[in-house]
Amino acid sequence: MDHPTPQISAHDAIRELVERVTYAPGYTKAVGTRVEHVEPGHVVMSLAKSDGLVQANGFFHGGVIAGLADHAGGGAVTTAMPPGRFAVTVNLQVSYLAPAKGEKLIARARAIQVGSTIGVAHVDVASLADGTETPCAVAIVTLRGVDFPAK
Image (cartoon, rainbow, N blue to C red; front, side):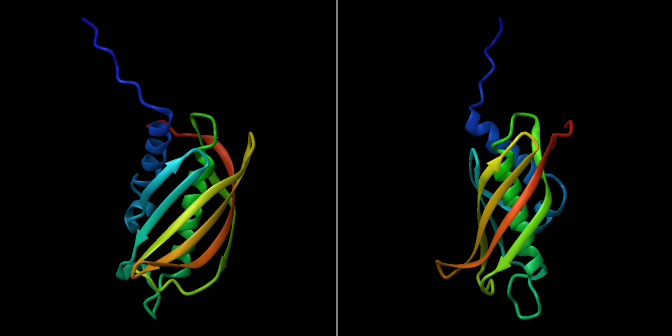
């Protein structure tokens, strides 16, 4: 007797894709990036402070902020692409607004244009300290759609 295969919702499928890329061995997993929320064209990610992610004054390093913005922007664009495709960065522009003094970074990314080859995302990054978010960076990420590698 055949048992029905559980169907995965479209929402679960895109979250699974973003988590697969984020939690795969590599930079984002090593630094502790977390996927907080996923929906088509929108991704929220976070990163808790650790000794290896700060500069000499104890604030998050600018490269870490840029890395989180880059990854979140890629996730947002990837969720708006056809199945089997994902986004890789071709340009990242980050403007720093304030020192990231908090215990956690939160990146909110939104796909603002997704075409057949190129996508663009806008990312707001905030530093969370004592329950208060302070904007610390804004980024525009331009990405190219490529075929997802086999598992």
